[in-house]
Image 1 (cartoon, helix red, strand yellow):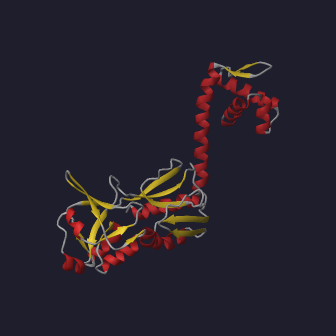
Image 2 (spheres, one colour):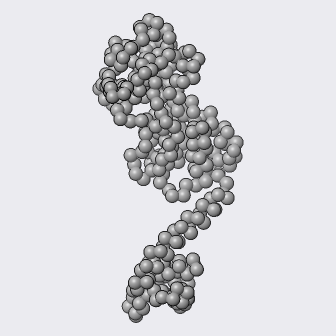
Image 3 (cartoon, helix red, strand yellow):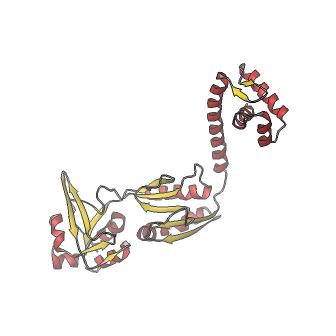
Length: 297
């Protein structure tokens, strides 16, 4: 039955038995016989036949809509079954911002490659926003959902920021009690294109936008974190970079009763972003599923 429906839909798209036959590599007479068989099975007339062109009847239009959807579902099911039995293989090119790539992604790669021995990975730790299309990148790991509607995204991690400093810095310069106290401290800053840098704080209904300054800035978080560990100032970084260091006593939280953010109104959640194919190849799908499995435990 699906074969008859496929012939019917192609005939509608082509506009004639002869053109449908060219697409399907069938004789026009064979196309006509199949349409006749389909009409007999359904008990309705699908086409108004004339020497000039084919016109759909009311039943034909109704069947076209339902038949097209049925073919799409059948093709999707067939593809998913084939993909389920396909072993991931080939090269995956990955772009990830430096701190998250170094601390979270890179330690996971040996396990993934051992699980899928036919896959190879080329990873680029880069704090620049890479264009997946022009750079031929399979997966980009980014903060925030993509603006480009042609890209698909899977959330990997809720990303909260913490404000921290080394115990030696706090001993020398004091602990900020309220966000406004940061104006008097050396803050370690992520570079941006704006003249001023702000840190954002919220507690209950209170919201504060605090201008911060400091003697060290960087596009990546690693230099700032190292400076903070050596009593160079106060830093605001993602919790996944800070939690272990706080537990080890190398850093202490500042303004712990406030919710902090580097961007106004932005959660900063981390996403795996990839080009918008409905059916990503097995290696790509396997890697994204692996990341979700490991980061959302």
